Image (cartoon, rainbow, N blue to C red; front, side, top):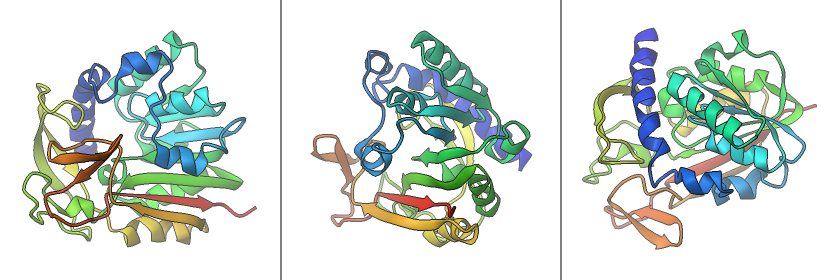
Length: 265
């Protein structure tokens, strides 16, 4: 597992500088006050965060963490990328915000953080980097206060079975172990001068949801969407302002799901 994480950490360290200057993340407008959060997340928990503590797992370079902080949450962001966390801390200081950023693998977080939170949050391209969702679910549950909630918005496992370039089914829906590929460019900058290996896992909805349920968390809302707010492939078309659909198949497939769960008192 350490080899997997080392390879992926090197990839995300390399991505950070390109993402910071990309149109995708639009950091200059972010610094002027534009939120990085999308309607899926704002509609689900935006009305709940003011005055609450929040743990943001796999936060990259922290734009979403800082956007929640601007809405009144007391946020702690976690990521394993040294460059990501360094960039997040610098940006947080530049903007005069008070987000706490921790550099560590999510599985190692109990060695770095003791408190519990009103909200645990993660979103968009997070579970694919995690080999063990049973352990992940136990960590998620560990950090939620009784009466608190967990929210995840993520690319749908059905969406992830396709090769986004040609529409062919290239990946298993059910987890068959890690895939190893060499990535050129990034979703935020397709022309970025990056060519690095990555390990990732495809997890079914069952594999994602059951460990959380078995931890005792209670589902309060589950949604699926036939579009994203991100143009992560050149083959996506804009069907409405800020809504992008992968249209090669000529039929709707779920692109995003969101899941809200609560922890009993």
